[in-house]
Length: 341
Image (cartoon, rainbow, N blue to C red; front, side, top):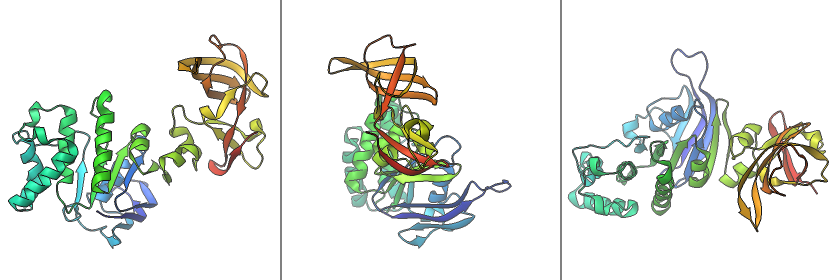
């Protein structure tokens, strides 16, 4: 597998008035599961195509294990890609689909059988080896597509372009679990592109949040959620996203705005930050008490709190909010974080 690095990469499509990326930097360790998380239009596919060799950077370098591959065509990079919709040969069996990349490379029969055994065992495809794609579920087809990407032993990097988009929501977790297990077992360097924060945060060792401004933050899923470096990251990651208020609302000095997660606050009738409840949503019970989300319209803006509810029918009532933890920002960038007693 390969360590991947983008070094001051700039790219502009021919005829475009502006760069898609400018001076973009990213490092992905050998054997790392990495997620590129961004909304539609953020440039995720462009970045993937720069890594696969379909596009050549306008400036900067793409490095695999320290070697500059910026001008190396995709067929010479030993990169495999999995797309939103599985690309399989319908006339071939599962094992023939999996073996096809090896046969093109003129691998021996023994090498082919050994790689098929390993990949089929890892992806639990052994019982389906003789099946044709038309008899498979979409979940199983995507597993075969992943197997095709993994079957060549010389593959240095696997790129996954929104691989769960077409899969039914109720089984997405199964495919994500399978991908993560295989990545960990084989030590494969994987870069997973998605707009879905749940997929990114539950799959990756590290996540890069990508916008039209570039990569705003690269960190572990926990750090991305708990300590966003940029207001956009706090807003984009999380369901709901971070609450943001003027720093004066919490008495925090040296900042313009403060952000806090819904679970970092609690309802408190005696707290000075208060407002009128505009919405409540019961999610269940916890320790025998109702638990859910409450949205409160304060003088500083709307605030959502997640936690135990003092009862039902809160809408329209005056309610206080006690915040326990915050992240402080100036000009959209994190400058501090702390606890409130």
